[in-house]
Amino acid sequence: MNVIFQSTYYTLYQAAKERCFYVDFGQKTVRMSLCQLLALRHKVMSINIEDHFDSDLNAHGFEVLMLCNKEHLFVLNTLEILDLKTLVSNSFVSLGLSVGALETITS
Image (spheres, helix red, strand yellow):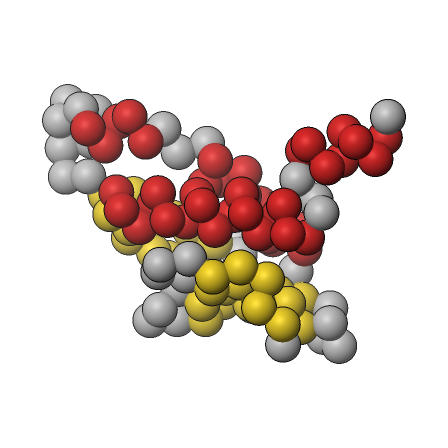
């Protein structure tokens, strides 16, 4: 397995022979297809981090994240969410699948 990107709390691996990815969340490692990794990116990037600093919108500063068709459940705090956002965005840049990279390829 190749390490694609490693952040403070998380690591993304690519298993070329298995044609899948593994995200190490510290306590648990989750196997994902590319489609599931894209779904993770969509979920993580749609989290409004500003809500974590407004006690009316998010009193406790936690996010519940369900992955892989509700197979995995994670409760993450604000720092873990910020780190996961970093992992996701930098991983797709490393894979060459970021929005900017796709726009460059198509133009």
